[in-house]
Length: 246
Image (cartoon, rainbow, N blue to C red; front, side, top):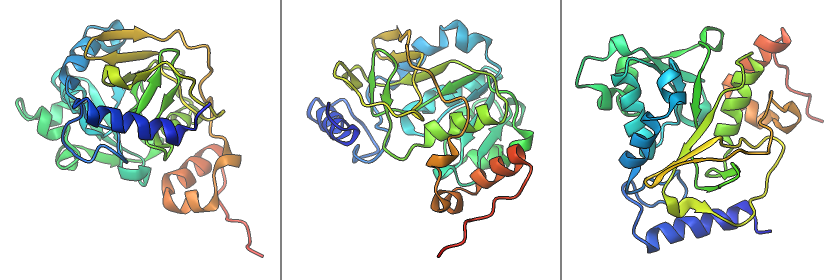
Protein backbone atom coordinates (compact mmCIF):
# COMPACT_ATOMS: atom_id res chain seq x y z
CA UNK A 1 0.00 0.00 0.00
CA UNK A 2 1.34 3.41 -0.95
CA UNK A 3 1.68 6.18 1.61
CA UNK A 4 -0.76 9.07 1.91
CA UNK A 5 2.00 11.41 0.75
CA UNK A 6 2.58 9.38 -2.43
CA UNK A 7 -1.13 9.33 -3.22
CA UNK A 8 -1.44 13.07 -2.62
CA UNK A 9 1.45 13.84 -4.94
CA UNK A 10 -0.04 11.69 -7.70
CA UNK A 11 -3.50 13.26 -7.45
CA UNK A 12 -2.13 16.80 -7.54
CA UNK A 13 -0.04 15.87 -10.59
CA UNK A 14 -2.96 14.13 -12.32
CA UNK A 15 -5.22 17.13 -11.83
CA UNK A 16 -2.62 19.36 -13.48
CA UNK A 17 -2.04 16.87 -16.28
CA UNK A 18 -5.75 16.57 -17.03
CA UNK A 19 -6.23 20.34 -16.61
CA UNK A 20 -9.09 19.99 -14.13
CA UNK A 21 -7.52 22.16 -11.46
CA UNK A 22 -8.05 25.90 -11.28
CA UNK A 23 -6.92 28.99 -9.35
CA UNK A 24 -5.34 29.21 -6.84
CA UNK A 25 -2.17 27.55 -8.08
CA UNK A 26 -0.10 25.58 -7.38
CA UNK A 27 -2.56 22.85 -6.49
CA UNK A 28 0.17 21.07 -4.56
CA UNK A 29 0.16 21.71 -0.85
CA UNK A 30 -3.51 22.69 -0.63
CA UNK A 31 -7.05 21.34 -0.93
CA UNK A 32 -7.17 21.77 -4.72
CA UNK A 33 -9.77 23.90 -6.44
CA UNK A 34 -11.32 22.18 -9.44
CA UNK A 35 -13.36 22.79 -12.56
CA UNK A 36 -16.91 21.74 -11.83
CA UNK A 37 -16.92 22.78 -8.16
CA UNK A 38 -20.20 24.62 -8.76
CA UNK A 39 -21.77 21.50 -10.32
CA UNK A 40 -20.67 19.41 -7.35
CA UNK A 41 -22.20 22.02 -5.06
CA UNK A 42 -25.52 21.89 -6.95
CA UNK A 43 -25.70 18.15 -6.33
CA UNK A 44 -25.17 18.80 -2.62
CA UNK A 45 -28.07 21.26 -2.49
CA UNK A 46 -30.48 18.53 -3.61
CA UNK A 47 -29.57 16.28 -0.68
CA UNK A 48 -32.01 15.92 2.21
CA UNK A 49 -29.05 16.07 4.60
CA UNK A 50 -28.33 19.57 3.31
CA UNK A 51 -31.96 20.71 3.19
CA UNK A 52 -32.61 19.68 6.79
CA UNK A 53 -29.41 21.13 8.26
CA UNK A 54 -29.57 24.47 10.06
CA UNK A 55 -25.93 24.82 11.18
CA UNK A 56 -23.24 23.71 8.75
CA UNK A 57 -19.47 23.55 9.23
CA UNK A 58 -17.51 23.95 5.99
CA UNK A 59 -13.77 24.03 5.39
CA UNK A 60 -12.39 27.41 4.22
CA UNK A 61 -10.87 26.19 0.94
CA UNK A 62 -11.63 27.58 -2.53
CA UNK A 63 -13.57 24.61 -4.02
CA UNK A 64 -16.12 24.82 -1.18
CA UNK A 65 -16.81 28.56 -1.61
CA UNK A 66 -19.99 27.93 -3.67
CA UNK A 67 -21.35 25.78 -0.85
CA UNK A 68 -20.49 28.31 1.85
CA UNK A 69 -22.21 31.09 -0.11
CA UNK A 70 -25.36 29.03 -0.69
CA UNK A 71 -25.57 28.13 3.00
CA UNK A 72 -25.96 31.85 3.76
CA UNK A 73 -28.40 32.39 0.87
CA UNK A 74 -30.51 29.58 2.26
CA UNK A 75 -30.69 31.20 5.68
CA UNK A 76 -28.50 28.64 7.41
CA UNK A 77 -25.76 29.34 9.95
CA UNK A 78 -22.23 28.95 8.60
CA UNK A 79 -19.27 27.77 10.68
CA UNK A 80 -15.78 27.98 9.21
CA UNK A 81 -12.59 26.98 11.05
CA UNK A 82 -10.03 29.72 11.52
CA UNK A 83 -6.76 29.39 9.54
CA UNK A 84 -4.68 26.54 10.88
CA UNK A 85 -7.38 26.06 13.54
CA UNK A 86 -5.62 28.56 15.78
CA UNK A 87 -8.72 30.21 17.24
CA UNK A 88 -11.47 27.65 16.69
CA UNK A 89 -14.42 28.60 14.51
CA UNK A 90 -15.91 31.65 12.82
CA UNK A 91 -19.71 31.85 12.98
CA UNK A 92 -21.64 33.75 10.31
CA UNK A 93 -25.35 34.30 10.91
CA UNK A 94 -27.32 34.75 7.67
CA UNK A 95 -29.19 37.77 9.08
CA UNK A 96 -25.86 39.62 9.21
CA UNK A 97 -25.27 39.18 5.47
CA UNK A 98 -27.08 41.61 3.13
CA UNK A 99 -28.69 39.98 0.06
CA UNK A 100 -26.19 39.71 -2.76
CA UNK A 101 -23.15 39.68 -0.47
CA UNK A 102 -23.22 35.98 0.43
CA UNK A 103 -20.22 35.02 -1.71
CA UNK A 104 -18.18 37.88 -0.31
CA UNK A 105 -19.19 36.96 3.25
CA UNK A 106 -18.24 33.33 2.64
CA UNK A 107 -14.74 34.18 1.41
CA UNK A 108 -11.92 33.81 3.91
CA UNK A 109 -10.68 37.29 2.99
CA UNK A 110 -13.90 39.01 4.07
CA UNK A 111 -15.61 36.59 6.43
CA UNK A 112 -14.72 38.49 9.61
CA UNK A 113 -16.59 41.54 8.29
CA UNK A 114 -19.78 39.49 8.60
CA UNK A 115 -19.03 36.89 11.26
CA UNK A 116 -16.97 36.50 14.41
CA UNK A 117 -14.74 33.97 16.13
CA UNK A 118 -16.74 32.35 18.93
CA UNK A 119 -15.55 30.53 22.06
CA UNK A 120 -16.05 26.78 21.92
CA UNK A 121 -18.43 27.10 24.86
CA UNK A 122 -20.78 29.00 22.52
CA UNK A 123 -20.52 26.57 19.63
CA UNK A 124 -24.02 25.62 18.42
CA UNK A 125 -24.94 22.03 17.62
CA UNK A 126 -23.67 21.31 14.12
CA UNK A 127 -25.96 19.38 11.75
CA UNK A 128 -23.71 18.82 8.74
CA UNK A 129 -19.93 18.81 8.26
CA UNK A 130 -17.92 19.35 5.06
CA UNK A 131 -14.31 18.18 4.86
CA UNK A 132 -11.85 19.22 2.17
CA UNK A 133 -9.91 16.41 0.50
CA UNK A 134 -7.06 15.80 -1.90
CA UNK A 135 -8.05 12.19 -2.58
CA UNK A 136 -11.04 10.05 -1.59
CA UNK A 137 -12.05 6.40 -1.88
CA UNK A 138 -15.59 5.30 -2.61
CA UNK A 139 -15.71 3.59 0.78
CA UNK A 140 -15.31 6.95 2.56
CA UNK A 141 -11.60 7.01 3.28
CA UNK A 142 -10.02 10.36 2.51
CA UNK A 143 -6.68 12.12 2.40
CA UNK A 144 -6.41 15.81 3.18
CA UNK A 145 -3.37 17.99 2.62
CA UNK A 146 -1.55 16.28 5.45
CA UNK A 147 -2.04 18.53 8.47
CA UNK A 148 -5.02 16.80 10.08
CA UNK A 149 -7.32 19.79 10.44
CA UNK A 150 -10.58 18.14 9.39
CA UNK A 151 -9.87 15.15 11.63
CA UNK A 152 -9.30 17.41 14.61
CA UNK A 153 -12.26 19.67 13.86
CA UNK A 154 -14.61 16.70 13.93
CA UNK A 155 -12.94 15.21 17.01
CA UNK A 156 -13.28 18.56 18.78
CA UNK A 157 -17.01 18.90 18.19
CA UNK A 158 -17.59 15.28 19.23
CA UNK A 159 -15.48 15.79 22.36
CA UNK A 160 -17.69 18.78 23.16
CA UNK A 161 -20.83 16.66 22.90
CA UNK A 162 -21.99 17.19 19.32
CA UNK A 163 -23.86 14.08 18.13
CA UNK A 164 -22.58 12.10 15.12
CA UNK A 165 -23.44 13.93 11.89
CA UNK A 166 -23.10 13.30 8.14
CA UNK A 167 -19.75 14.15 6.58
CA UNK A 168 -19.62 15.32 2.95
CA UNK A 169 -16.63 15.89 0.69
CA UNK A 170 -16.82 17.72 -2.64
CA UNK A 171 -14.06 16.85 -5.11
CA UNK A 172 -13.44 16.38 -8.83
CA UNK A 173 -14.10 12.87 -10.09
CA UNK A 174 -10.35 12.58 -10.82
CA UNK A 175 -9.79 12.75 -7.05
CA UNK A 176 -11.91 9.64 -6.47
CA UNK A 177 -9.41 6.77 -6.52
CA UNK A 178 -9.74 3.00 -6.40
CA UNK A 179 -6.52 2.07 -4.68
CA UNK A 180 -6.26 1.39 -0.96
CA UNK A 181 -5.83 4.43 1.25
CA UNK A 182 -4.02 4.04 4.59
CA UNK A 183 -6.27 4.81 7.56
CA UNK A 184 -5.22 5.84 11.07
CA UNK A 185 -7.57 5.67 14.10
CA UNK A 186 -8.02 9.45 14.14
CA UNK A 187 -8.82 9.75 10.41
CA UNK A 188 -12.21 11.15 9.46
CA UNK A 189 -14.24 9.28 6.83
CA UNK A 190 -16.89 10.58 4.44
CA UNK A 191 -20.53 9.52 4.24
CA UNK A 192 -21.06 11.25 0.91
CA UNK A 193 -18.81 12.31 -1.97
CA UNK A 194 -20.09 15.02 -4.31
CA UNK A 195 -18.39 15.42 -7.70
CA UNK A 196 -19.29 17.28 -10.86
CA UNK A 197 -20.89 14.03 -12.03
CA UNK A 198 -23.16 13.42 -9.03
CA UNK A 199 -23.25 12.16 -5.45
CA UNK A 200 -21.74 8.91 -4.18
CA UNK A 201 -23.01 7.36 -0.95
CA UNK A 202 -20.00 5.67 0.61
CA UNK A 203 -21.73 3.32 3.08
CA UNK A 204 -18.40 3.55 4.87
CA UNK A 205 -17.58 0.59 7.14
CA UNK A 206 -15.08 2.73 9.05
CA UNK A 207 -15.92 4.41 12.34
CA UNK A 208 -15.31 8.12 12.85
CA UNK A 209 -13.47 9.71 15.77
CA UNK A 210 -15.73 9.97 18.82
CA UNK A 211 -13.39 12.27 20.73
CA UNK A 212 -9.90 13.69 20.72
CA UNK A 213 -7.11 11.14 20.90
CA UNK A 214 -5.00 13.17 23.31
CA UNK A 215 -2.08 10.77 23.07
CA UNK A 216 -1.70 11.96 19.46
CA UNK A 217 -1.60 15.63 20.50
CA UNK A 218 1.87 16.99 21.20
CA UNK A 219 2.78 19.96 23.39
CA UNK A 220 3.80 21.70 20.16
CA UNK A 221 0.29 21.10 18.78
CA UNK A 222 -1.15 22.65 21.93
CA UNK A 223 1.00 25.76 21.45
CA UNK A 224 0.23 26.08 17.74
CA UNK A 225 -3.51 25.48 18.20
CA UNK A 226 -4.65 27.26 21.37
CA UNK A 227 -8.14 25.95 20.63
CA UNK A 228 -6.91 22.55 21.83
CA UNK A 229 -6.18 24.01 25.25
CA UNK A 230 -9.71 25.39 25.27
CA UNK A 231 -11.11 21.93 24.51
CA UNK A 232 -8.98 20.43 27.28
CA UNK A 233 -10.20 22.99 29.81
CA UNK A 234 -13.86 22.57 28.84
CA UNK A 235 -13.80 18.77 28.92
CA UNK A 236 -11.26 18.05 31.67
CA UNK A 237 -12.19 20.91 33.99
CA UNK A 238 -8.52 21.87 34.42
CA UNK A 239 -6.12 24.10 32.56
CA UNK A 240 -3.62 22.32 30.35
CA UNK A 241 -0.19 22.15 31.94
CA UNK A 242 2.73 21.22 29.66
CA UNK A 243 4.99 18.48 30.89
CA UNK A 244 8.24 19.59 32.44
CA UNK A 245 11.08 19.22 29.99
CA UNK A 246 14.04 17.30 31.32
